[in-house]
Image 1 (tube, helix red, strand yellow):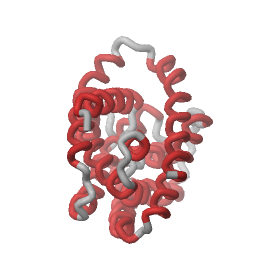
Image 2 (cartoon, helix red, strand yellow; image 1 turned 30 degrees about the horizontal axis):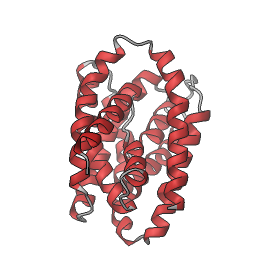
Image 3 (cartoon, rainbow, N blue to C red; image 1 turned 135 degrees about the horizontal axis):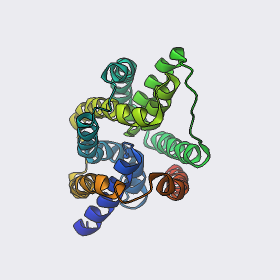
Length: 244
Protein backbone atom coordinates (compact mmCIF):
# COMPACT_ATOMS: atom_id res chain seq x y z
CA UNK A 1 0.00 0.00 0.00
CA UNK A 2 1.35 3.43 -0.94
CA UNK A 3 2.01 5.09 2.42
CA UNK A 4 2.33 8.55 0.85
CA UNK A 5 -1.12 8.22 -0.73
CA UNK A 6 -2.58 7.16 2.62
CA UNK A 7 -1.05 10.13 4.42
CA UNK A 8 -2.24 12.59 1.75
CA UNK A 9 -5.79 11.20 1.79
CA UNK A 10 -5.85 11.24 5.59
CA UNK A 11 -4.51 14.79 5.63
CA UNK A 12 -7.17 16.06 3.23
CA UNK A 13 -10.04 14.31 5.04
CA UNK A 14 -8.75 15.30 8.48
CA UNK A 15 -8.50 18.95 7.47
CA UNK A 16 -11.96 19.07 5.92
CA UNK A 17 -13.58 17.14 8.77
CA UNK A 18 -12.22 19.30 11.58
CA UNK A 19 -12.96 22.46 9.59
CA UNK A 20 -16.57 21.41 9.07
CA UNK A 21 -16.92 20.16 12.66
CA UNK A 22 -17.60 16.45 12.15
CA UNK A 23 -16.13 13.09 13.01
CA UNK A 24 -15.35 12.08 9.46
CA UNK A 25 -15.63 8.31 9.80
CA UNK A 26 -18.12 8.30 6.92
CA UNK A 27 -15.45 9.71 4.62
CA UNK A 28 -12.84 7.26 5.86
CA UNK A 29 -15.28 4.38 5.51
CA UNK A 30 -16.16 5.31 1.94
CA UNK A 31 -12.49 5.71 0.97
CA UNK A 32 -11.51 2.43 2.62
CA UNK A 33 -14.18 0.40 0.83
CA UNK A 34 -14.10 2.05 -2.60
CA UNK A 35 -10.46 3.14 -3.03
CA UNK A 36 -8.47 0.74 -0.87
CA UNK A 37 -10.78 -2.27 -1.30
CA UNK A 38 -11.27 -3.21 2.36
CA UNK A 39 -14.20 -5.41 3.33
CA UNK A 40 -17.10 -3.72 5.19
CA UNK A 41 -16.21 -5.11 8.65
CA UNK A 42 -12.51 -4.24 8.31
CA UNK A 43 -13.34 -0.80 6.89
CA UNK A 44 -15.73 -0.08 9.78
CA UNK A 45 -13.12 -0.92 12.42
CA UNK A 46 -10.28 0.84 10.59
CA UNK A 47 -12.34 4.01 10.08
CA UNK A 48 -12.91 4.30 13.84
CA UNK A 49 -9.19 3.90 14.55
CA UNK A 50 -8.36 6.47 11.88
CA UNK A 51 -10.84 9.12 12.97
CA UNK A 52 -10.40 8.87 16.76
CA UNK A 53 -7.18 10.94 17.15
CA UNK A 54 -8.61 13.78 15.03
CA UNK A 55 -11.79 13.76 17.12
CA UNK A 56 -9.76 13.91 20.31
CA UNK A 57 -7.73 16.87 19.05
CA UNK A 58 -10.84 18.70 17.85
CA UNK A 59 -12.68 18.11 21.12
CA UNK A 60 -9.71 19.34 23.16
CA UNK A 61 -9.52 22.52 21.05
CA UNK A 62 -13.23 23.22 21.59
CA UNK A 63 -12.85 22.51 25.32
CA UNK A 64 -10.02 25.03 25.63
CA UNK A 65 -12.28 27.59 23.95
CA UNK A 66 -15.06 26.82 26.49
CA UNK A 67 -17.55 26.06 23.72
CA UNK A 68 -18.65 22.60 24.90
CA UNK A 69 -21.85 22.22 26.94
CA UNK A 70 -20.67 19.28 29.02
CA UNK A 71 -24.04 18.62 30.70
CA UNK A 72 -25.86 18.52 27.36
CA UNK A 73 -23.18 16.27 25.89
CA UNK A 74 -23.63 13.69 28.63
CA UNK A 75 -27.40 13.71 28.15
CA UNK A 76 -26.78 12.55 24.58
CA UNK A 77 -24.05 10.09 25.58
CA UNK A 78 -26.41 8.29 27.99
CA UNK A 79 -28.55 7.17 25.05
CA UNK A 80 -25.78 6.77 22.48
CA UNK A 81 -23.25 4.56 24.28
CA UNK A 82 -25.58 1.59 24.94
CA UNK A 83 -26.51 1.64 21.23
CA UNK A 84 -22.79 1.59 20.32
CA UNK A 85 -22.33 -1.52 22.48
CA UNK A 86 -25.34 -3.31 20.98
CA UNK A 87 -24.30 -2.40 17.43
CA UNK A 88 -20.71 -3.51 18.01
CA UNK A 89 -21.85 -6.87 19.37
CA UNK A 90 -24.17 -7.39 16.39
CA UNK A 91 -21.74 -6.35 13.63
CA UNK A 92 -19.59 -9.55 13.58
CA UNK A 93 -22.71 -11.66 13.04
CA UNK A 94 -24.06 -9.69 10.08
CA UNK A 95 -23.43 -11.41 6.69
CA UNK A 96 -20.88 -9.59 4.52
CA UNK A 97 -23.38 -8.79 1.75
CA UNK A 98 -25.96 -7.44 4.20
CA UNK A 99 -23.17 -5.45 5.86
CA UNK A 100 -22.32 -3.92 2.47
CA UNK A 101 -25.94 -2.94 1.93
CA UNK A 102 -26.15 -1.36 5.40
CA UNK A 103 -22.91 0.61 5.04
CA UNK A 104 -23.79 1.66 1.49
CA UNK A 105 -27.27 2.80 2.48
CA UNK A 106 -25.99 4.82 5.45
CA UNK A 107 -23.32 6.52 3.33
CA UNK A 108 -25.85 7.35 0.58
CA UNK A 109 -28.40 8.70 3.07
CA UNK A 110 -25.75 10.86 4.73
CA UNK A 111 -24.73 12.14 1.31
CA UNK A 112 -28.28 13.03 0.32
CA UNK A 113 -28.87 14.61 3.72
CA UNK A 114 -25.72 16.70 3.27
CA UNK A 115 -26.85 17.85 -0.18
CA UNK A 116 -30.31 18.96 0.86
CA UNK A 117 -29.95 19.91 4.52
CA UNK A 118 -30.41 23.50 5.58
CA UNK A 119 -29.36 25.19 8.78
CA UNK A 120 -32.06 24.92 11.39
CA UNK A 121 -32.29 28.05 13.45
CA UNK A 122 -35.31 27.16 15.57
CA UNK A 123 -34.85 27.13 19.31
CA UNK A 124 -37.78 24.93 20.26
CA UNK A 125 -36.58 22.05 22.40
CA UNK A 126 -38.15 18.67 21.60
CA UNK A 127 -36.27 16.62 24.19
CA UNK A 128 -38.38 13.53 23.55
CA UNK A 129 -36.48 13.14 20.24
CA UNK A 130 -33.07 13.06 21.92
CA UNK A 131 -33.19 9.29 22.66
CA UNK A 132 -33.90 8.63 18.97
CA UNK A 133 -30.93 10.66 17.75
CA UNK A 134 -28.68 9.22 20.44
CA UNK A 135 -29.60 5.61 19.61
CA UNK A 136 -29.30 6.20 15.85
CA UNK A 137 -25.85 7.76 16.18
CA UNK A 138 -24.76 4.96 18.50
CA UNK A 139 -25.85 2.28 16.03
CA UNK A 140 -24.00 4.10 13.24
CA UNK A 141 -20.82 3.89 15.30
CA UNK A 142 -21.33 0.33 16.53
CA UNK A 143 -22.50 -1.35 13.33
CA UNK A 144 -21.17 0.87 10.60
CA UNK A 145 -17.97 2.27 12.07
CA UNK A 146 -19.27 5.76 11.32
CA UNK A 147 -18.74 8.73 13.60
CA UNK A 148 -22.47 9.26 14.18
CA UNK A 149 -21.93 13.01 14.00
CA UNK A 150 -24.98 13.81 11.86
CA UNK A 151 -27.59 12.49 14.31
CA UNK A 152 -25.66 13.91 17.27
CA UNK A 153 -25.67 17.44 15.87
CA UNK A 154 -29.33 17.09 14.85
CA UNK A 155 -30.24 15.90 18.34
CA UNK A 156 -28.42 18.80 19.96
CA UNK A 157 -30.21 21.28 17.68
CA UNK A 158 -33.51 19.68 18.64
CA UNK A 159 -32.63 20.42 22.26
CA UNK A 160 -32.39 24.11 21.35
CA UNK A 161 -28.59 24.38 21.13
CA UNK A 162 -27.23 26.81 18.54
CA UNK A 163 -25.20 25.49 15.59
CA UNK A 164 -21.75 26.56 16.83
CA UNK A 165 -22.33 25.08 20.27
CA UNK A 166 -23.81 21.94 18.72
CA UNK A 167 -20.67 21.37 16.64
CA UNK A 168 -18.44 21.84 19.68
CA UNK A 169 -20.57 19.76 22.03
CA UNK A 170 -20.93 16.95 19.51
CA UNK A 171 -17.13 16.58 19.46
CA UNK A 172 -17.19 15.36 23.08
CA UNK A 173 -20.08 12.99 22.37
CA UNK A 174 -18.24 11.57 19.35
CA UNK A 175 -15.03 11.01 21.32
CA UNK A 176 -16.87 8.92 23.93
CA UNK A 177 -18.88 6.96 21.33
CA UNK A 178 -15.90 6.29 19.10
CA UNK A 179 -13.80 5.16 22.06
CA UNK A 180 -16.58 2.75 23.06
CA UNK A 181 -16.87 1.37 19.54
CA UNK A 182 -13.10 0.99 19.31
CA UNK A 183 -13.01 -1.32 22.34
CA UNK A 184 -15.29 -3.82 20.60
CA UNK A 185 -13.92 -3.48 17.06
CA UNK A 186 -10.31 -3.79 18.23
CA UNK A 187 -11.14 -6.95 20.19
CA UNK A 188 -12.64 -8.45 17.02
CA UNK A 189 -9.30 -7.97 15.23
CA UNK A 190 -10.81 -6.34 12.13
CA UNK A 191 -8.50 -3.31 11.96
CA UNK A 192 -6.24 -3.12 8.91
CA UNK A 193 -3.27 -1.35 10.49
CA UNK A 194 -1.33 -1.18 7.22
CA UNK A 195 -3.97 1.23 5.94
CA UNK A 196 -5.19 2.78 9.17
CA UNK A 197 -1.87 4.08 10.49
CA UNK A 198 -1.08 6.05 7.32
CA UNK A 199 -4.53 7.62 7.22
CA UNK A 200 -4.37 8.36 10.94
CA UNK A 201 -1.02 10.12 10.64
CA UNK A 202 -2.28 12.28 7.78
CA UNK A 203 -5.53 13.06 9.61
CA UNK A 204 -3.66 14.17 12.73
CA UNK A 205 -1.60 16.62 10.66
CA UNK A 206 -4.80 17.86 9.00
CA UNK A 207 -6.52 18.40 12.36
CA UNK A 208 -3.70 20.73 13.41
CA UNK A 209 -3.85 22.64 10.11
CA UNK A 210 -7.63 23.15 10.17
CA UNK A 211 -7.67 25.95 12.81
CA UNK A 212 -5.07 27.84 10.76
CA UNK A 213 -7.21 27.51 7.62
CA UNK A 214 -10.32 28.67 9.45
CA UNK A 215 -8.51 31.88 10.36
CA UNK A 216 -7.90 32.64 6.67
CA UNK A 217 -11.12 31.39 5.05
CA UNK A 218 -14.68 32.63 5.09
CA UNK A 219 -16.43 29.72 6.88
CA UNK A 220 -19.79 30.39 5.22
CA UNK A 221 -18.36 30.49 1.69
CA UNK A 222 -16.15 27.47 2.40
CA UNK A 223 -19.10 25.42 3.61
CA UNK A 224 -21.25 26.62 0.71
CA UNK A 225 -18.85 25.28 -1.92
CA UNK A 226 -17.50 22.20 -0.14
CA UNK A 227 -20.78 20.85 1.24
CA UNK A 228 -22.28 19.83 -2.17
CA UNK A 229 -19.03 18.11 -3.15
CA UNK A 230 -18.98 16.16 0.10
CA UNK A 231 -22.64 15.19 -0.36
CA UNK A 232 -22.05 13.88 -3.88
CA UNK A 233 -18.94 11.95 -2.85
CA UNK A 234 -20.72 10.26 0.05
CA UNK A 235 -23.69 9.32 -2.13
CA UNK A 236 -21.47 7.85 -4.86
CA UNK A 237 -19.35 5.95 -2.34
CA UNK A 238 -22.50 4.57 -0.72
CA UNK A 239 -23.85 3.28 -4.03
CA UNK A 240 -20.48 1.75 -4.96
CA UNK A 241 -20.22 0.04 -1.56
CA UNK A 242 -23.72 -1.41 -1.79
CA UNK A 243 -23.10 -2.73 -5.32
CA UNK A 244 -19.63 -4.08 -4.50
